[in-house]
Length: 107
Image (cartoon, rainbow, N blue to C red):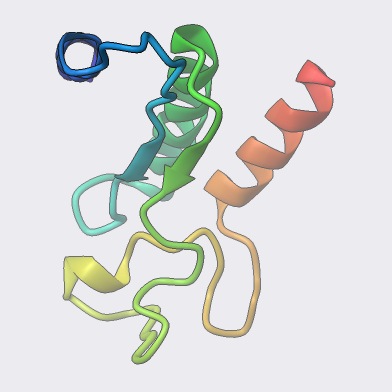
């Protein structure tokens, strides 16, 4: 992500003659539980948050809070439904707890 982030910042600088401070938001980034374990997803969620802080992004947006909001299925084989931080019944996955703990520790 870092090379892409720096390339984006460079493009903004190149096309920003008034040198305004234009932030880059890290968005739609995540790892689904079809490709990684819930514990790996938690580690990657914390890494995403820390990378955002490291580069000074004003915001880092996880791919999805609750899977595909229109058709959440906690057991689906569809990876698009497996990004959520909570189940369809709003029970937290490890990634939710990891981000919550990270936020408390950084505060």
